[in-house]
Image (cartoon, rainbow, N blue to C red):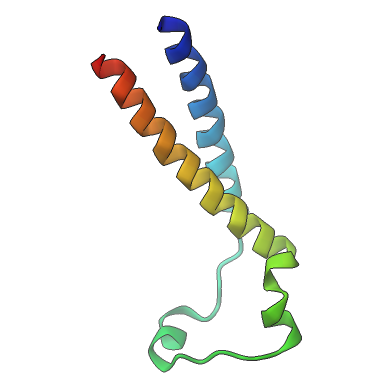
Length: 82
């Protein structure tokens, strides 16, 4: 059981560092609160293919790493209770 804890800790630390690096490399979105209030969306080529850009991929990886972070945190808390 101790080996599993150590392996999960190492993966957890790698995910933490990767999440910090990716989150700091992302550029700030300019739309902000005004777009949320007005609901302004543009229907152009860039908006339709935003997921294929570098920013879209970084956003996707941030979400994936965030989910992995939460799952590993729950797994570690369960392992330390046992």
